[in-house]
Image (cartoon, rainbow, N blue to C red; front, side, top):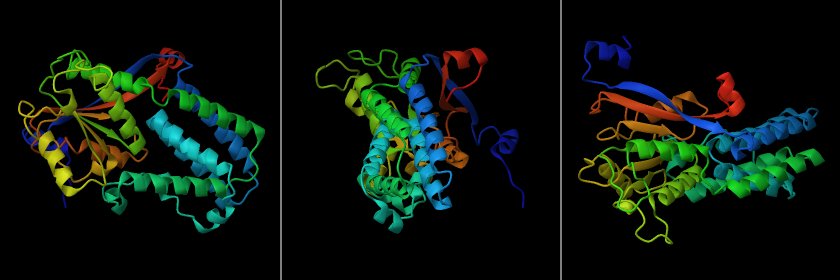
Length: 339
């Protein structure tokens, strides 16, 4: 058996597979009091307090307690919106008596990893997946609940306040993405009659909360706001679509067909996808740019995302995989990434 890598095949023939370039999109001059950085610091404090309190508890209780915090950390790295919703579920569970449920529900699979394309749950409606995530978060919280310390309660309240204040605002990653869109897809983005180039981008995120947040932020930037009639770009209502699990076959095929149609003949330019679309979907026909809005913890998922456009029959010689890199001012001076 001989295992060939794409780079090996490119050495034989440069016509089969494109070259992949992974490019960091720098988030510059992020202040130390930026909400995403402040929440990250507070969440780390909360983790340490929770870990210390559970030190003498059973192994299962410690594991459930740390799984709750890890799940919150993953969602915060995706978006404040995804973090805010899950944090609210966690706080509500702390205020309820759920020990009985915790004894009967030990399945926390959705806290460990979101549904993948080869997971049967990927075909479920988004609302059903979120409901199950909430149930598992509540059960894991209850399983490790005990009597939380005043410091934990204070940290939860501070995180909730910050998250609620900023969950609907464009964060640093959204701003970086918008800058990239202006530089590459639509120079006059959001202005009346702005023209779009014949180029497309595929944006991946792990969570449906972030997908909805990102869709709304992009719609606002393009100009799809009721209070600004005729203020947006050319064919603005046809520029964005989403590809997720739970949609019917007919809708799925329609989106794939539109995205793989020549941009001169179809206005779709931005496709937001969750990881349910990371396998078995060919989107390389007229797209060579992919933006990782969040980074999955399992590296194979990132590679499978890239495989949607980095594959045989890609028309462009080079595909671009973009990822946001945020730095605070001190970290920038040291040359180290903060997030």
